[in-house]
Image (cartoon, rainbow, N blue to C red; front, side, top):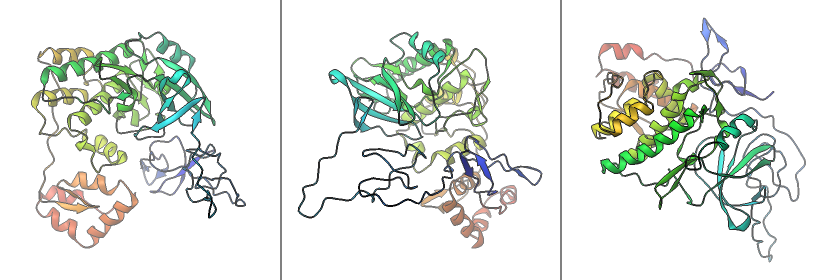
Length: 415
């Protein structure tokens, strides 16, 4: 069985476990395992004259982007270059299921997306899902029944090196990541929100929980000003308000309840809120923050909504990004916001006191909890934070806070 080694308690854990459930003292370890790599034993093998290999030693086919055995990246120094005097050969085009890969779309997570070109020069968006994500006939049937104005048409699907893929029509060539959303024009912004929200509402009414709303899964036609949803490979079909379904992968757009292995219709509304937060801030809200640190902050403090945004947008984001899924905004609330009608939102949490700042890994932090989350985001950051603690820099910084803040900070074992 594939396993991960928890950096905190050093026990071997099942690869699908989100938080480490190893017993420690009087409770569970609880370390977040989403960014801990699967432990794959190194395979010693004779060097190959022609064959590229992954970083764990498995043989790859020419042009492979990932290892079909362990999912690791190719080792870049194994492919010999041309002999002296030879002309370097043109690289062969990478083809998946008859679709030629033109470019890889940026984005986090194990699900990969590529701009591809197919028969008849058709433009497509190819989604290559992680190992273990297979066809769900009920979900596919529900997606096929969605109106063409909501879901991108699937042109092809199949299996590539043990991974499921599907190709969606991509004639516009843009996703929400590329779309220019003008927050300075209230009418235009409201129309954009209406288009995105009505799409999620229709999907939810069909009983679908998409579970992977992010900029790369929402296709955009700039000329028509329309949006289409794609990438239903992680979706689930349900009529319940809450289902126990472990997340296939976690990204910055993942709702808090999904971190605990549950999903509800409200989960996709949270993801929409994070997408709008990212667009409204021009991505500044995620600068220098990895996804694990962001999710830790969500669990501890909720999503931070910048004070610099106008009150109307902040109201919308507060509603969509309520940690309590039962208080989170859905279609009725968003529609009322679009019309300018008053709507109740969860109270904003009391801001954590800040005093001075302390630097860690090139960034400065003014609040103890954000500093602690940044310290726990990687072993390197933890080592630097521990050095600051030993040198007394943290104690000096905390002198400017109320006594309660200083008492909260105690050296713990490494994450």
